[in-house]
Structure formats: C-alpha cells, structure tokens
Length: 632
Image 1: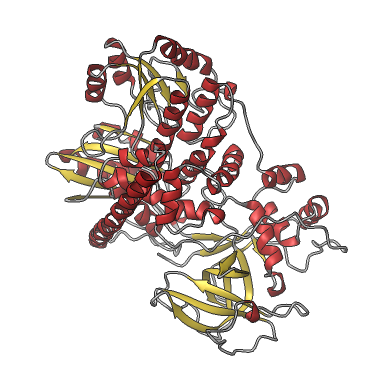
Image 2 (image 1 turned 90 degrees about the vertical axis):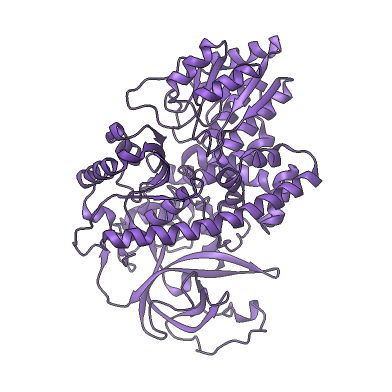
C-alpha cells in the first residue's frame, strides 16, 4: 500500500469558535465537528446526542405485513423465518423467532447453507419448506430480489412477508408480497441493517419495543458495516449498553471465549471479537450453530457452542491466510497494485481473481483485505467444476460495486448485495468476460486519484492537548465505524523515542515527544503505569504510544522530527486508565504529500474563558487486534 496523502480540510475559525461557545466543547473537538460537516450547532448537538429514532409505522405498508403474520398466528399455521448465514442474517432471524415465540407462534427457521444453497431464497428451498408444512415464510436479511422464488412459494400455498435491506433488482421488480424495507417503504433513515428492520417489525407485532433484543441490533449493525450515522448511532449506543448487561447465555459465553469483559464491551470488541466468531459458523459450517447460541437458555449448552465457534474461527483464520497468499501471488502476476497518487496508471482497475480450492466462506474476508490494501474493487471467485461463487468489495468510496455487477449482469448467473460489498454466481466460461467488463466499468467510473490512499486529518493538536480530558471528550463521537471513522489527530512537531517491540515483535510501543521537558529515559518495565504519566502540575511533554502490526519498527527513525497522525484512546490495564496514542501514519517532518486546507492553529478559535466540557462517559478499553470480519 502506498503512503497516504495527508488531507487537512478547511476549517472556518468562526465556526469552531461558535461550537466552542454554544456546545461547551474543546477547540479540538470543535475542529473535528466542523471538518466533518457539523458546523451548525444544532446538527453537532444532535450528532453528539445520538438519539435519532423513528416509529415502526414509518415503514409504508408495514401494517399489511403485520396483519398477514397475525392472521397466521390466529390460525396456528407453521411460520418459518428464512434468514442468512452472516451475523446480520442470524441476528435478524433470532429477533423474529423470539418475537413470534413470545406470541405463541408455531415457528421454526431456515438458514441457507453457503455451499449448497448459496445466498438468499432459492426455488429448491421453497419446495422443501412447503413439504415440511410451512404456510407463512418471513424472510430476514434476504428475498428483496427473489421475485420468481416468492411467486413459486405463493403458487405452493405459502404466504410470504419480505423483511430485508439489500438493494433491489436492476430492473426494479419487487416480490409480490408485503415488504418491510427501508428504501422500498420510504423509511426516514435508509441505512438500517436487516436486524434493525426485523426489530421494527417485531415491535409492530408485539405492540412495544422488544428492548431485550437491542443487544442483537447493536451486534448486527456493527458487523454488517452499515453507516454508524443517524438512527444507527442511537441503536448501537443503546444496544451496547444492553449487550454489557445481556442475560442471553450465548452472548455471555461468547464474550468469555473472546476474552471480552462485558462491562467494557464497545464497537471494537464487537467487530473484532464477537462478530468473527458468529460469522465463522456460516463460513465454514452451517450458521445454525450461531443461531442456537443466541436462542439457547441453557448456560452449559451456550458454553459448548461458544467453544465450538471459537475453534471454527481459528480454522477460518488459517484458511484466510492461505487464500490471501495465493491471491497476492495472482495480483503480482497482473502487476496490479494500485498507484499511490504519483500519477501512475494502475492496471487493472478492478481485480477479479479466480481459483480452484478456495473456500467460498472465506473469500469475502480476503476480498475485503485486498480491497483495503489495493484501494480498488476486488472480486474473488471460488471455482468448482463449471461454476464459481464470488464475493467482492468496492475498495474505495467512489466505486459502487453493486452498480458494477449490474453493468456486467450479462456475464453473471446471479448477484446481489450493497454498494460496498456483494456476492455473485457465475459460469466458469464467463469469468474472463466478466473480468474484462468489470475492469472496463471501473476505468469508466474511477479516476487514479480515487484509488490513492488518503489520511483525512480531523484536528491539529499540540502536545498539551493529549490528555485524558480530550480522550474522554472524543468518545462523545462514538460509536466509530463505517461512515464515522475514528478521529485522526495530527502532531507536526513529534519525535519518537524509547522504541521497543511488543507482542512477540508484531507491534511497537514508544514515547512521543513534543517540545521540551520529556527525558529520553527508558522506564522500568516494573514501574506503575500511573507513575509514568506527566505530573499534573505541568503541561505534558510526552505521551505513551503504540503502533500495531509494524514488526517492531516505526516508519520514522527514532529521534527524527516527524509529522504524524494518531488516534487517542483510553487504555485500561490492571485497573489503571491512561490516555494512549495509536499511530496511524507518520513521515519525516517537512516531507511532501500533505494537502493542507486547514485553519491555522494560532487562529482565534478558543474562547477566552474555557467552556465547560460535555460530561464524559466511562473510558474505553484498548482494541482487540483481531481481523475484522465483514459481511458477505
């Protein structure tokens, strides 16, 4: 991956000053808000509050879906919830099954097998469900594109209610059934995950909010990588609190095997600890084990299933490493690494890689890693005989992957997904044509600059800012994730000292010096953490820092002046909390490739009288540095 260009957007001093005065926030937080388009105090206040909410009745036509389900409840017919094999599909299925059980329904579920069934509702599944007595099929996280399959179900005497959030078909056709879908039904917030949609449907069915399942909504919203904006922010904030106190034995057991303290669960521990283990079941086995984990009331059984998912996740990681090495070798043969903004033409612009022996449940994760590395669309196809199954990631914000697949539909047997991630089925003979077509589409849609990595700087800070007050204040912008990236702080006068490897040489810990007053003395490994902090009676001159996955080395020589960007987090260890910097990028001071559109730090942005701070929430733990598993 090429070195990113530092982009420091413009920041109007008067807007910063206004936020400082009206919201009572620091200069640093006000800069973040302004640079993220939240210069108006009302919008900034609403973002920080994270309390957007809309009633389930905002889904146009949801009353028809509810009435259909209630009719089958009265008649006592068999209801089947058809979900999907990822976290969102499992959690949305669990929400609907739990709600229907509460209402006394004769309810079961069907989760497709990734190898045998593929994604979504298919015709063979409809036949099997009809044979086992299903009379109402409620989809969860699928079926918005299953026009023919829904028609087949109805022809067999099965009523259908579609609950989904995926993109509709390119031809605009919809299933002939009651639909609960954010965009199709004109819901005020279009970015709900499937579990949030199911949660709203469950609320309409039982007559009140099923708040005991907010933990599942938070888990799925984070895992499905939908934007953590608008109502999703409110759902995740509330859901994380619910997850911390969950009484579901399966979720408690899963936190135990993932070594997550429930009292400190946050969006990171969900994304890096819980989600990969739930996803692993549907990737390498069947997702039913993950659903059983969520639904069981037996703590002993929950512990057994959680251990099983943990073992499967280790298998998944090994398979991922193997596939990634093979995929990188194929990319090297193509000469396809993206340019780093130096004007060189990357060829190809969309990477389509196909091979025998790749596990169809793992290629999506590898596609995600490669897209992050190469900053362009990546599709991996697992070939098996005359057919292949593929999973892709967009790789950059400017590219619409689902739109790209739609443009290449003549080459595909089946496809679906989102702007950022999608899956497909294809005949082996069509792979070459699809590869050329997607690359041509990417050349038409993407400029070279779109594929160059960019580090967007949110605020420029002095060393004196980097304390616990700012670390706690920045948490008011959480939860962080898709659409609300972690805050990037820039120091322009930093030097790195006391550099040491950690984590068996995988990571690096060091001290960041700025200004004078911090002796370059290696502290004792036995010294208490708090004893290493700067005295409260003087401005801090240094800060603890860590860099992950660097092989024990840093991009700038020890003692050399550097311009660097960091995340500022609250690290908790042995009952002690302290602010800690996490290195994002660094280069020697004065090096090029900084696009500075900022307001100068000496602009009059700080009130003469310090404003009161927003009350800080409790500190967040350090991240679990596991692979983040995305959907599809």
